[in-house]
Image 1: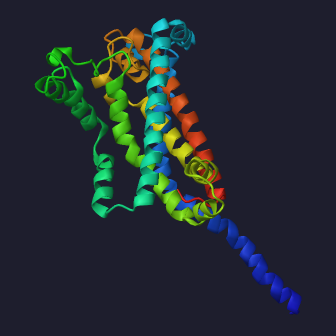
Image 2 (image 1 turned 180 degrees about the vertical axis):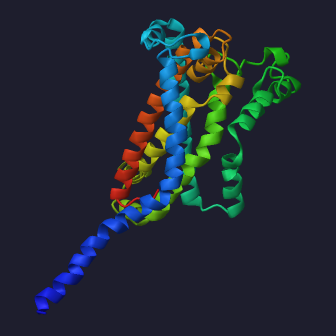
Length: 306
């Protein structure tokens, strides 16, 4: 056996083992992925068939796109879609802005473990509990209106501004902001901790002001992670049901509530349009999640830890 042959054999064996090593994680995840594919894929297939009009219980079996057409022509659906986009965009923008300020404050001031622990508490609270808390706090007969009446800011609880089931969905936005600010802030804190203070020190050495350091140093560092977190929050708030169901108006409804009402209607003929609206929500959420993943990968390529 020559030296060249002896060297080639280990290289060949390594090349043969490489595909096995790459496939090993997928084999380990195969049982969990199979469950997800069966449950999610099966539900999506069943929902797609029902959205196309295949509902044997209602004696509907012909596949048609008429339900999607009626959905596109329904003015109530367009109002619900625009209202949902407004709530999701406003909640995400306010939460992102507050999170940037909180992350910078935590990084600059240090703060103790107790303060950080209290700041992280909203992460453990379900959205349904937050919605109920906002209802008791901001409702016309809630704690805030009674306190304002007690100190003489308003003539009575009934004179307090309407912040729940209101036109501008203030209660819904407040619930989402309170819940999502810690999530975005923690992601930004991880990025700022990894980047370190060296670049900011260089900016100070070059006589850059606070706004210049934020605009040209801090913001480019945190932007991929901030964008990814914001898109995740947008995707969740666009498809969430419990908060707008409790705190939203009866007309126009947010799109998830409209979809649920149509799906649960006693008239089974209305069910396909409700499912079609649910598929629209799923499509928007999927686009937001994919865009968030793209920003996450971009952050990782830049060496930013999420």
